[in-house]
Picture 1 (tube, one colour):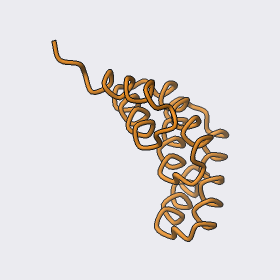
Picture 2 (cartoon, rainbow, N blue to C red):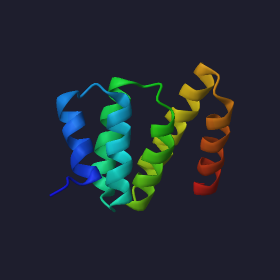
Picture 3 (cartoon, rainbow, N blue to C red):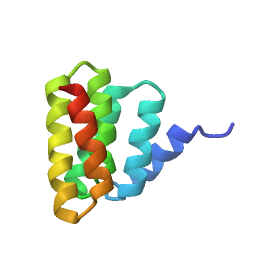
Length: 104
């Protein structure tokens, strides 16, 4: 029986927990499967490993919103805005500012 994408990503992260790309893929797969709590855990772990992985702030904030954790989502977005400004990623910064504005 073929392994699911989610299982493959879990195995990749288990083999190399510091692999940012695999961790991001796992977080996205969890979110896609509707497991937003698990997705948030992986986004948080990813940002501990690689705090400049700015896409994780956007998607992590979205997962937190889906869990109804709006204050935590706002904080995720704010941290992402700060980091994206520090690294000069204006595109991600503007996306994060837009979702933060919508969230209020």
